[in-house]
Length: 166
Image (cartoon, rainbow, N blue to C red; front, side):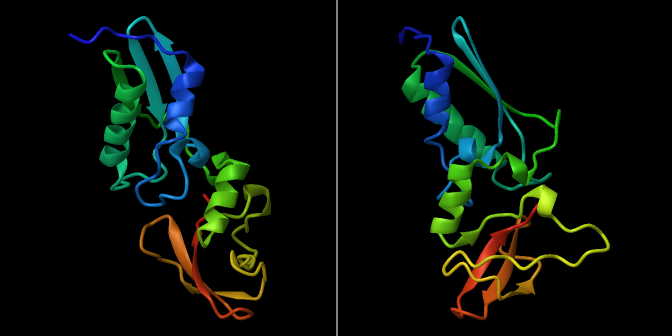
């Protein structure tokens, strides 16, 4: 029988920082901003996660990855990992480190919502994650997943994906 060890909330958050998003392995779920709450009490850990999109196909993989990671950090402690719609996830929740990780992996980070287009304005050019140029064009609004679009940089001639602003 494994004796439960009660970890500190900081240790749980540090463990979550090592769980990568399955669709974008360059960024952790913590830096992606989907971790809403972490509660540690007695022999239980409760983690609330915010889905990036309704119907995201990676939700079960994320839940299982979080449970596995918490089992390593706190053996014998029950981990309750739930998804909630108590508040909407937005791309503003992505940390600065997360935005840099996206850029470094060739994914354009989303435009901050205060810079996002309105219904009347045209969408601003996505900066190229390779050369930083704003001379880019939207090739396809629908990338490999619902949360990404495909762009092309006319300066360095590189195609790239950008996380959509939500």
